[in-house]
Length: 247
Image (cartoon, rainbow, N blue to C red; front, side):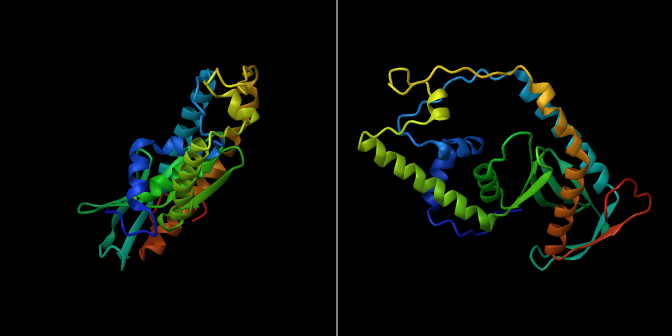
């Protein structure tokens, strides 16, 4: 599916910045208030990565099982495709797609977050791929929707923040911050901090996120159904639907 036109006001500048900075880095960049900030090594325990991978796997498998018996029919005014009821919904890596023998239509990108959500990352994905992003926030059990139209607000702010930081740099102004300075590798700065992180209770403190796997999967199913219906298609449930998914 090709990317449709958006309301990005500074597409050339934005495209250049997205080539320079991966989407996963955008939210951290916008948090910076100091033009001289240098990212340093945080030495995070591997427990965070292990938990994230495990929870993401649980969500993706639950989601595919819940979508497995849904079939798509009708014709979409937006895409111009006619589906006869043989099309299903497949999870391909982090994308939800409609598949039949002739078509593959991208529905949404699925982001699973065991910590803080990243709206600027989601905006970059929505802008670049041309489909909505569904961010599953396991700490709260919420699912956040961000589409290509909404991405313009976040990405224009990103461009403006880069411009403003450059202006601060030209004025030789540094703005210290407790957490920002702790993560900065500019040791010559008088505001540099050498605090350490504590990882003693990560597994205990984060284990409750597994409690939200089922409810988050249900909410993702609902969001995906809503997107498909907004595309103009109808959804049928085939025999053998099991589990607690509200259809």
